[in-house]
Length: 404
Image (tube, rainbow, N blue to C red; front, side, top):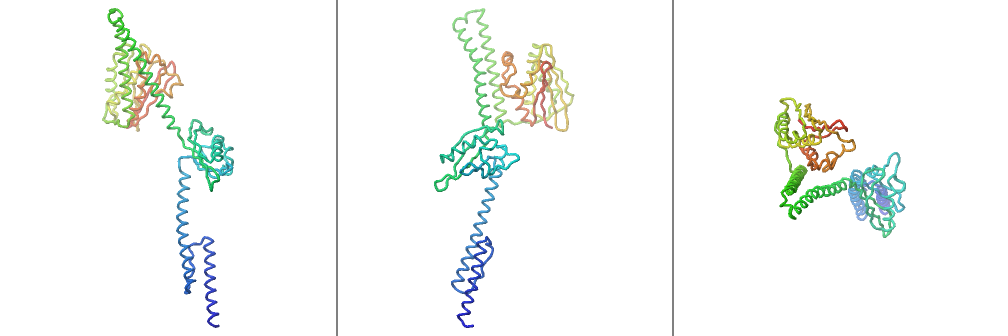
């Protein structure tokens, strides 16, 4: 075999290896390397292809990592995400969206968005985004999740000037909306509670200034009314300050061993005036020596509020029984009265701020509507819970727990 034939055979063999290696690269086998020959140009070509395969392998690993990261975010994020094509057909949906959209027992991918249980509102937004090429935002309450408020945004997917699909993102804003409603109600309630005594004070003061000040018979009546309304305002402001402090996150409890029976006796003595007025008797059934680990001042405030309510809303010649039971978890304290009881429809809201079962009677008795809310917050500061059991005509039993 002459030199030319040998050279052709060598070059042909190396070309064959390059072609075979290129095919493996094309098939995705970027770990393969083409044998590097000794011929100058073919050697450079083999080295270039091997380098290219290595770079592509690195880029593909990076792309796969990014894909896995995006897939994890898509799967686990709290927002509901739906992706549709240009015709409104669902192409991707994450688990959160499945739950909010009521997906059970069927596969939504490949379905029209409008066919979903909670789809009509979303479909309308998707159609607007697809037709206009502009983002659309709105709020809905999906039928599949009653009471849930969603903030939805629909953004078109645009490729080379053409709308190819739509991405819908739904965020649960039920909590913030409830907080906004509670804030509005709180402001309205405070304004109303302040307005009533202020109106009475202004009216009485104007009457006195108009000449009633010299009226020895009626003047003192107006002055007494001003004093009573001022005391009511003072009580309201004090209760507002207490509940604001309890909710601020700055409040802390300084726990010490507290003799529960002795604390109940001390609290009852402080309420002697209202107990005598209502002819109500307090029966302290707490076992001697029973101690709880609590902030004495805050626990005293809890008992004052509960006993004050039990006295005010009790019947004449009624009773208030206070008992306590300890177990491995802590101590449960009960305050039982012989009043008229609370209708069942009011029980779920009884610890809300300014919530009153009988608004007129509560104001007549000097209540601010904040006492039970203060009780709830002070008990929760200790890590405990508060509740009520009641039936109309059979009195009420308010209870709270102090953990061990």
